[in-house]
Length: 229
Image (cartoon, rainbow, N blue to C red; front, side):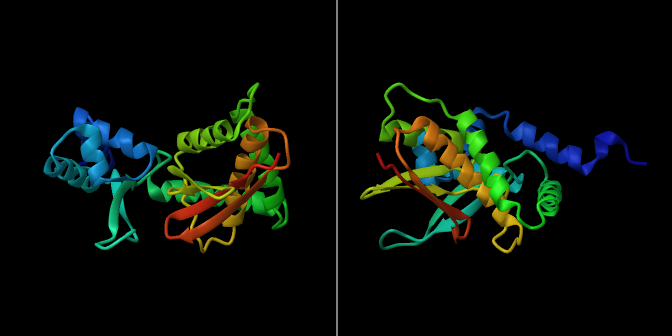
């Protein structure tokens, strides 16, 4: 007869907690929580030998805490392999997907397949609540505010600037919406409103232009921000 202590689910949780009792592995998880990381980055951050970091990564992948993603190389050589968290909301993948799909169906049904505009409005309101206005707003401060909120929400953001366009690569979606999901636009609209709300609250006065480009590559979306004074 099985007992609660013999549950496979509890056994997996116990193994995960045991693995994270190691300070080095916990440091690796903290670093990857910010954004996906290369082995070289983790080696520099932890001060451990590269082979030791690889061994820790292998154990964390085996325990289901991490997964890998490949990015096209920026020069000669093999594609870069980054490590990222497998689950962002603390729920098993199936349970997380079930919850998200149920909520999307409710929103979609309530607005008769027109849930994107109200979702963007709600995201905007949330963004304004999460952002803090500053006495002397600047481009640097508003971008820092956007990246900070997105990092806290587990988007693994990466900022870059090109001419007058500020781009934020979003390496992870906390809702893990599939590109094939017909209701995924509701989630994307919420995220667009969220970013707009942060920009309008923390940024300098003006009509700022914000775009969200979903699924520009596997496991990658991109936000574009133009600050217009």
